[in-house]
Length: 536
Image 1 (cartoon, rainbow, N blue to C red):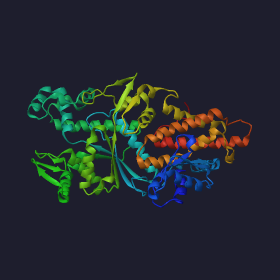
Image 2 (image 1 turned 180 degrees about the horizontal axis):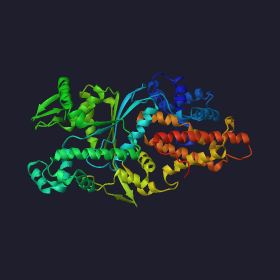
Image 3 (image 1 turned 30 degrees about the horizontal axis):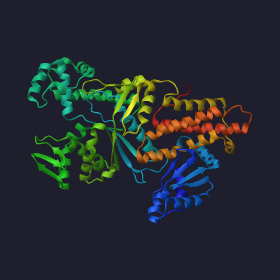
Image 4 (image 1 turned 180 degrees about the vertical axis):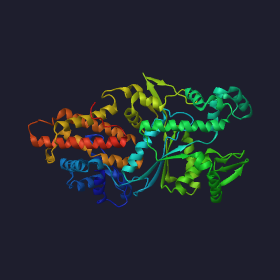
């Protein structure tokens, strides 16, 4: 519907003008609204409200609009005719599972289908996935669904940090469980200084047992760490499978970059491009060290080699990286680094997942991965279920801090937002079951009540919601929409009888509306990755 309104505006305003159309928050401001008059005001050197009145007058003639009004200081508000909603309802019923799909890619391709690399989770394989990893995990999984929905070709990728100091530390932490005296000797010669840097927790004890205490005493910490990361990676994959989070590629830093000499190749490539300098015995790119004075490469060089692989070797048009909050200060450096590779930084989209607090009984549950005090993803899923975990993480914008309300997530009532949305779907199924077989001929013009109009207004939003989210990546828009759609359906359910009302023609029309609601909820749940229960 938004694209339809934009199209009408494009026919009457100057070409190239940016047009934004959004659903109105309040009905007194119409069903949809645009601020395009403000965009035109500066170039036309006229008040926005004067332009808005002219636009409203011209668009009032459209067959789709019940009313078009200009509102101070310069908005144009649109009210749709019921007939326009009836036509959209027919499209939903006709398209079924394909309703909501489009071939209108968002900003990732500037209107063209793009080859997108979406890298997310990528937690170091030095411990189990924590509850906090669920935030980026579910977000990335759903964002991939959305981008595919508008036609992009998406590769879901997990970057396995199985090289570097953390692998040595993991091995040392495990060795400490069976041979602490050996660890003391190693630390005495190593710049790590003391045992305070070691990983702790029950999972370290479990790894020591699984890897064999006797064998561990004879092994080098790095070798122990590599064996442990392989085991932990298997556990990570199992956890992600439980969560319904899928990956196409597991990219090993050690295997695909270090062993193949890709860091050296990338460094030589950067030197040829210029901008690399030697100072204080180290190799620098801007304010970032590529090679330390001891000759060891940094994570920055490894990350540049990884993005060289993405953009230059595998030829992705766009790379979307979802990182944790601790990487916030690294974002600008990576953008400059990619630019040094000769890649427009616009093609690298770095999204930062802010911190999560687990709250129970009104109090924060403290967590520390280093100390071994954390809630694993498996434990959270066991406690609240996959649907609640997904929905709760997705309710908040990725760039805001969030509280995960454990008590509410466990609630099996309509207070729980995912339960509330799923209950609308179950109600639709139950109505349609009572009316089996469902009518194929219906007069939608009979759908004119307030609750019917409001439900239709929500149903037709799905394609616009998905297209907009593919452009700005605000995935939390979908859970908000699920709640608003469920609210409209529950309101309709409570106010309008459907089956056995005496008026057969009206019954058929309402059954068509319920069928459309079921289709939209089903398609929305598929994209969100939550289940479609038959009963509750």
